[in-house]
Length: 380
Image 1 (cartoon, rainbow, N blue to C red):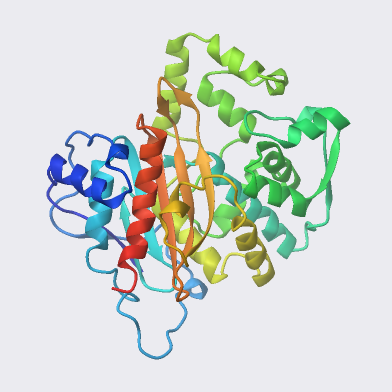
Image 2: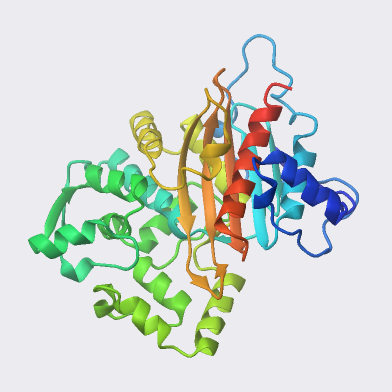
């Protein structure tokens, strides 16, 4: 299996913007094109998708006549993805891999992008791997108290504050962490599985390639903001107040450092490969695979990201991620998932925005255009 990066002369800025306008529902959502910059050379380049995939993770043996899209991407899809990527401002990565086939495409697929809540997927995989190895049970109870509270999106924190503490099963915590992107639920799973080192060990054991795992929500967010974590930041809006009190130079320096070398960074191609292996059933047991994909199908966040670009009859299971804002720039705006066509063909689709000042509607429009292109070219 190989990953082919599109390598063409730079397209005109006007052409790129016009193409993007034709791929989404409203030309008003199309951002101004990015400035011209050097891209790959004019000859095709073939590179591996992360580390070599184990033999057990190979595409299933085909039965009968292969469809045209099994061994090669549909003609025109690579060009479409390139134009969409080229026209969008900011650092953006796109990866598409046919799960039941032998090809993958990417733009900036090998670069590291901030994952933010996308990394919750690796926590859930790690704890399900522990379940598969009988180190943890889905019915195991986990206590969560005020000392465990984190920052930003944590709906579960309201229950902890009102009840003093909450006890939940691992099963319920996975559901809450993935479907509601609850930071407190995720950190509680992280603590249960053995902390960040346990997740990193899982990533290494499974040879997932260019996927990092950060230090946990509290240290990740405080470090990105330029703060040193204090547990009092988990109360009300204390974190936001402390962040706002910092000199802008401190905040900007911390943000720049994070973007230059994200501690939770991952490459779009590595994530697409990991999703492919998850869907093929080579990362977890059959029961855990089915369970996790089912949970991902109930994700509430990001309904207007990749999912909204797919036509009726397609299904999508996914995980989103969104980082902090500073001066109108967002450090991490992502959606990753598995799209299934009406005929059962599956594609891993990854769109990651490392830093962009584009409007939220424009970001969603790009994501919809990418997933829409996959659907449009399916079967060609």
